[in-house]
Length: 266
Image 1 (spheres, rainbow, N blue to C red):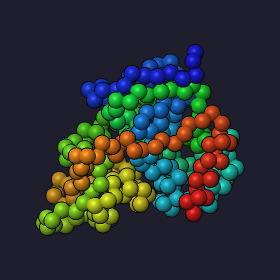
Image 2: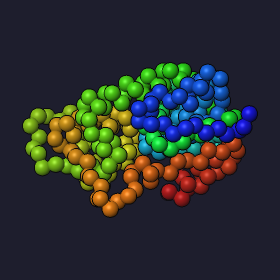
Image 3: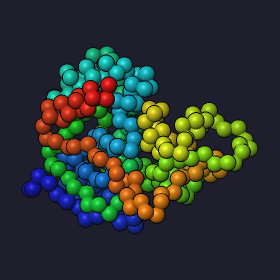
């Protein structure tokens, strides 16, 4: 079997669940399903991890939430990344309790999968045999990931039907606040400045991107924020500017690139 297969582009009518993901689950495939907004990692047909540039990764959720110091994360990457057992190392070294790691990992997985399975006209690709350096934590059945993705999409549409709020820069409106704003939403509202997107705000807070979308759509429904509409001459959408992390079969190369990027960001 070829190490790489391509799927037909998903249309909005069949955006979720993903037919390709269903086929991979049926054949108990192991590898990386790459879509234009994220990557799902499978082992024996189950989803074991997910990443998307639209949402904070498990490292951000762990360190910002206080479960792990940043130096502890980088130590785990250095010690266990090449062996693809970072999650196991964090637990065995006593840096993170097993239950806390599972909860954080599931949150990051469902969060990234929501974006990775978004409607797209870009063909998906699957690379057999690729595994993620986080290693085994808690596999999730494909049907559970698809069901949760649909539930989240329907919830957002019920709150506020304009999906542009999820990707465009957000600005405050001139409307006055008629009712108290919950503390969680106030933290989000304080970061709305006409330039930041929902992803920017989630990264800044170190919080689930989906839950940030929920807060922003509620603020939009209350008339407190609005999406900044792109100029007619702007031919690039926010989605097309997203650059996915490179997927490689060589974990050492991937780790070195991540370490290099982190050092350059200091």
